[in-house]
Every structure is written in structure tokens, then in C-alpha cells.
Amino acid sequence: MPDPGPLARFTVLDLTRVRSGPTCVRQLADWGANVIKIEAPSAVDTGKGLGGERHGPDFQHVHRNKRGITLNLKHPEGLAAFRRLVEKADVVVENYRPDVKDRLGIDYESLKAINPRIVLGSISGFGQDGPYARRPGFDQIAQGMGGLMSVTGLPGQGPVRVGIPVADLTAGLYTAIGILVALLEREVTGVGRWVHTSLLEAMIAMMDFQATRWTMRHEVPGQAGNDHPTTVPTGLFRTSDGLMNLAGGGQEMWNRIVATLGIEEEAKDPDLANDKLRAQNRAKTNALLQSRLETDTSANWIARLNKAGVPSGPVYSMDQVFADEQVKHLQMELPLHHPKLGDIAVVRPPMQIAGAAPQRRPTPERGEHTAEVFREFGFSDLEVAALREAGAV
Image (cartoon, rainbow, N blue to C red; front, top):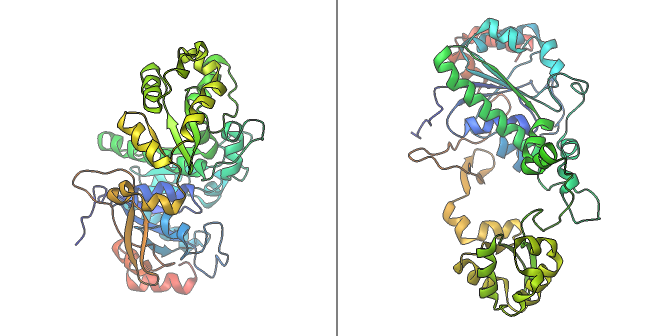
């Protein structure tokens, strides 16, 4: 039998859809939490929705390591059944618009009345209240409103969306962290918490030093393209056979770059004498490095620079990422066996916990474990059959 995982003692009711909520729940499921994915019956939910096709990469990635049941929360008997599940659960996670859970009667106060130990995790587009609370949330909207698009892309070419749904992903991660904090506190107090964030809040938090440049100094950062906004030289450079990244802020790192590239004489230019001057003369600094780097291959320069202790590396397409010897060593592909898709691989959790391994359960089919789960929560077979007959599951 596989290791049950460090979170096996926690039961999570997963009401989430699309990406931010499922990303949150996956952090718990990967480490063994008893996650029950709740979907509407197919007769109620006839559309594919924004989560992608069930047997496609997106859906399989974010919903792995869960068991699946169907439950119609808009049906009185379905809602009553959900409330019975809450009695024995530890966590409920949802990413509806804020008013939806109130209409359904599954807001925190309602759940707390059933089970004071429950932790509710909620993700919204813009927050649980305020002037934008009922607006529909979407990752690219948060990227724009949170400032990320304004600093992404080449200078003068206009805002650019980042190539991953970073607001969705980080909102999920922050919520998972909050849930774990609430569960730790519950061990002392015996009482749960409502943990909530939004795509907008997560995006602003992820702006990190760029946002703090505004809050502390009222500086408005702009696009820096492939250059680092504050550290010189850091950027993307052409070589004789492609492109490479190089990062070398600080005088000691600059000295190593100069020695490795063999540009000691050129580096005596007064405009390049220290960090401040190199930052003021970024174009001149980069041009000097570029003139030398384009004389040899990326692989040769990367090997020489890393040997000298200078951070540098290739720029990979996704197939090249997984062909890299270090990535193979890290075993970032997590193999699974899916009953319909056969042997597949997803991306494993990036953290490694000594003595514990991530779970390897494939994404469930809709309602695959309905009867099994309800029995575990004390429902009789007759009760489950009655729920099916009523259209509640």
C-alpha cells in the first residue's frame, strides 16, 4: 500500500472549479489529504466549462489524488447531504463568486454552526466584499489590475500577459498556506477559521519588491524586458548558436564575468567602474558582454561561467526542459496510471519532504466514488439510492 501521506488525517470537501481553487486543493491532495471532489451530476452540469476536457492535461493535472462524487447543492436533499458531510470534514474549499455560497447556505457562519472545527477556504476574483466583489474573476484581468502586465514585456511595446495563469496559481498557493495555518491553530483552539484571498490580492502580493517600490518610495516600475529591473548585468544575450541568460550583480560577480569573458581591458572603461555606473550605463554594459558572448556557443559559455560561480543558463522550450539532465535527476515527471488514459505523467510537487512521497492517484471520473464516500460518512445504501432517485447526486 502507498504511504498515506502526512496530511492523511484531514478530510477536504472540494467544491472548486477551473484553476485557482483546484490548485489550492491539489497542494493538500498531493500530500495525502482525503480530498473529495464534489461535482454536479452530469444531468445538471451539461457543459465542459472552463476547466478543460476531463481527460486533457489541465484537468488531469489539477484534480489528481482526489476521489470524485456528484452532488447537486441546489437540490434540497443534495444540500442536506452536503451538510452531513461537513459534520465530519476538516476543510471545505470553494471559489464561487462571493454571493453564491451565501445563496446556497454554505457560507462560513452556516458551516461553523454545523461543525465549529471546519476550515473554509475561499478564493474570489476581487475579494469577498467591496465594490468589485461580484465581478467575475479571470487570471488575465488580475494580471492587468495587479500591475504584472505593466512591467512585463519589452520597453515601449506595451503590456504583456505572462505565459502562465500566475494569479490563479498564486491565489491557490496562498489559500493552501492559509488553510494549513488555520489547521495548525485549530490544534490549539479546537476552532476553525475562514481563510480567503482573491486573484487580485494574490497578484499584488506576487509583485513583491516591484509593489514595495511604490508603497515605500512612490516609484512606478516600468517594463525592463529581459533585463532585471534593478540588477546589472542580468539579462538575455545572443551567442553563436542561440540565446542564454546571465545574472551577475555586484562587483565580485562582475569581476568573475570580466575574467571569464576575457574583457579586462574593455572593462577599464570609467563608465563601467562600479555597480551604480554600470546600472546608469546598462546599454553600454550589455553591449560589451554581447560582443564577446556571440563569439562562442551557449553551452560553452554556460559551462565556463558556472565554473567561475556566475549564474547562467539556457533558454529552453518545454521539451528541452524535460530533456535536461538536472530535471531528469530531479524526477519532475510524476508517473501515474489512469484507467482510461493508461500510463501518463504529470508534474510532481516541487517541494521534497524527507521520508514522505507525493500521492499518485489519477483524477477521478465524474461521480466515480459517490457510493463509496457516502458509505464512509454513514449513509446507508438505501439513502444513497434515494438521493440518486431524487436527482440529488
